[in-house]
Length: 79
Image (cartoon, rainbow, N blue to C red; front, side, top):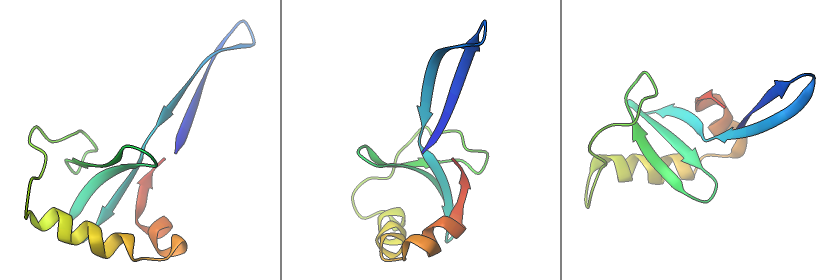
């Protein structure tokens, strides 16, 4: 998970945590350790419609979840 620190007068004024973004099998998605997946456009922006039911997205996600930690890291594009 990416962390961004905001400094004001050389003091930490805030921290913002962002979900990691991955690309796998033609899909781009955020993965947050407790919120789970969120499908994104290729530029990282969230899609307006999230996949439902029997979408191919969920089948891809099942394959991605079976990857090792190192294999998942190779698919990460942000975070």
